[in-house]
Length: 190
Image (tube, rainbow, N blue to C red; front, side, top):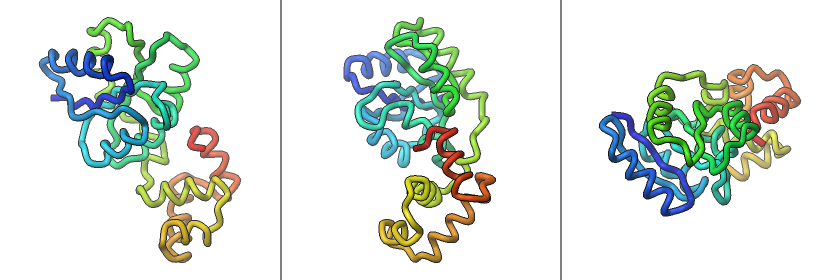
């Protein structure tokens, strides 16, 4: 059984998608979210195999949410949904880690097929190896915060921040702050 989490801000569309998933033998709805922030919260406590992600949600939009989803432990595959057949948007979504892309007027069988194909892909980017805390330190570093600032914000010691920094740089293959910033920009994490 493939567990699907539906992230869509329009209630009617979300309910329709849930009904379609309910009709498929091998799929079940694991949970739902109506915005990007809620999605990340729900994912932290709800195991699922696939996130069906609306690209244009309020707050943290779909494109911004993709790298954050991919960075979670045991990250689900991401199938992006869009109102329009935007080739550029699809390319960006796939570049930042989505496994598939469909428009909302896609034939349900196509979405069904993509969900199954999605389950077979697992080419996770290096930042997917970061722990939740390492990812927080990474985000703050590339925004220009100092080790002292980060220690204050996260209520941990400077030494702990430095340890996280060393580990995350090693995992990302970065040798300098410039490398970290470049990595963040290439993967659209900032």
